[in-house]
Image 1 (cartoon, rainbow, N blue to C red):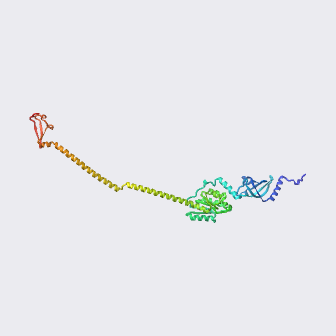
Image 2 (image 1 turned 30 degrees about the vertical axis):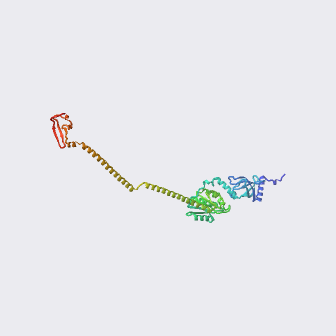
Length: 400
């Protein structure tokens, strides 16, 4: 029969094993593939690390996983640092992971890819939301280090080509702890106070670690929320950051960002010059056409003096024609009158009386007496001679 003093309960056995494991495996490095990954609302990460022959459970509590720049995924090969423990309730070994990095692909590269995919799915990089640069920026806000090469390059370009443009610098840390928060706060402050027409956010070149502040979600969301158009200018042309994707326009370098600001101004000025030239050309053509039309009208329209002289000349000509017509009319009428007068004179009784004849008329009614048969004895008559008149009484009628 077994010695009862050496009999262990299951819980006691697991407690002893837990002590042994934790004393001997207080820090280990374990490489394996992530499987069955889960991240419940508690904020802890639960997963299984496995290789071709075995598997072990892993836990990464919230205080540690908050420091990870990426989120583990199933199938990801990782290298974990932690301590081995035993979960006494089930007697299962587990690795309490305190740090993790991706094998092959670096942690920052993975974090960049994951954040890029997530923000892209939210629409932070959508082309349709990107705004054009203002044509005539009066104030350019710059978010960068106050002592770095970036601000010197920007000042050099704008002082040479950006006449009249004011520059407001928000000096911030551009790498290291707290840099992302300062950059995001500066962008937010510019928008809150409406201090600039366009923003340049950037820094000079560096490693991925040096540029990491511009890959932080905090900075991307501040740029996305900016009402002021943002030009990102981080590192060199080959460096692409999350800030570049969220910005309205990406410049390969800080000096190139300044060139873009000036370019938009110069393009607008050139466009205005072109419009002015077109307007002047059209006005000149319009004036020329109106001048030609006016000349044509002047040719067709006499001056008031010329018009009056023309009317006077026409009046004189009409008066001359009228006088001539009147003379001709009078001459014709005089000739006709003379003819009528001749005829009247030939027919005049006075002319007959002058030749010795007389005119006999009854006194009572003045009727001319042409035949004796018209008379009666005792009738009173009036006889008119060339000179004078006689009254007679008929005494006898012969051969009536």
